[in-house]
Amino acid sequence: MQQRDILGLGIMLALLAGLGLFFAYAPKTSTNQNTFLPVEITGSSVTVGTQAGEQALRVSAEIVQPGFVTVHQALGQAPGPVVGQSPLLSVGRHLNLVVTTTELLLPGSQYFVLLFVDDGDGIYQAGVDLPVMSDGQVIKQTFSL
Image (cartoon, rainbow, N blue to C red; front, top):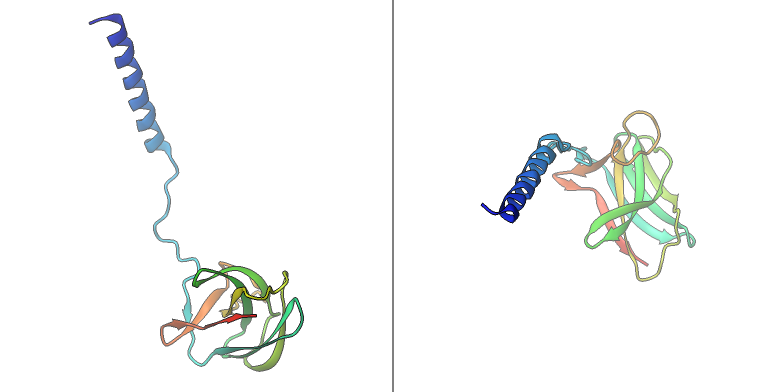
């Protein structure tokens, strides 16, 4: 073999060894991520009312477990980042509840309102407090300004 062939073979072996080490020691990702798995709670509902200012929205909600109403920007046809949330709501009917948003609600933009059940700490935390569903459907309503 010529010296260039030996050098090329050495480089290829080093690359293969590096690739093998990468896959052997790369962090493993979990395939069992249950973040945002909705919780079935029959009897809850949410209805969007009117805009109560550039950064506020009126909603009505009926909940059977303590939780929150959240406002999300739309990402296509799905809820995206949270842009507003209610304080912790007790069990019952909440009419004309004003939910303040962290951003201006823009005309022509689409938003989602969802219900989340509290995990018991009284503080809304995305990924900890879970969306509510009833009869297999997430309780949500879309709206545009």
